[in-house]
Amino acid sequence: MDSSGVQGLKGSWDYLDGENFDEYMKEIGVGWALRLTAKGIKPRIIISEEGGKWTLRTESAIKTVTYDFTPGVEFDETTADGREVKSTINFEGNKWVHTSIDKSGKKSVVTRYVDDKGQHMIDMECGSVKARRWYKRTE
Image (cartoon, rainbow, N blue to C red; front, side, top):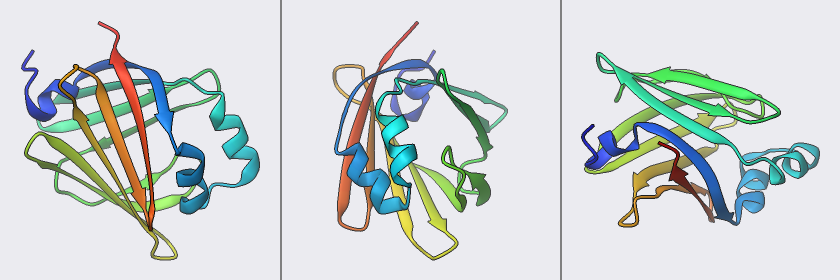
């Protein structure tokens, strides 16, 4: 498998750690009860691609969420917390940039990449709030 750029994101990843995730969830409009539940979840992410169509699946003991997309094509997404958003994912250099806009016009940007330690990094930004989560490859 090509491990360079966004191709390197393909495969299975287990949650390692994160920072400022609760503040980020609060900024995007996730309620207190769901934020409290999310704190204890250590999800697995599975990324695959076939014929130019990509799939991201997030699995946890509580919920599994899957979305399919074609890079550069806007799609309707229902987030893990149930919000309806318009999303577009673009590949910019070695990064996967996921831009979402909710019904009230609030924009969030989630950027995924593999760092120099081989970890799947996820940088999240909404308004002035920034957060980060990182994952290790399982296979």
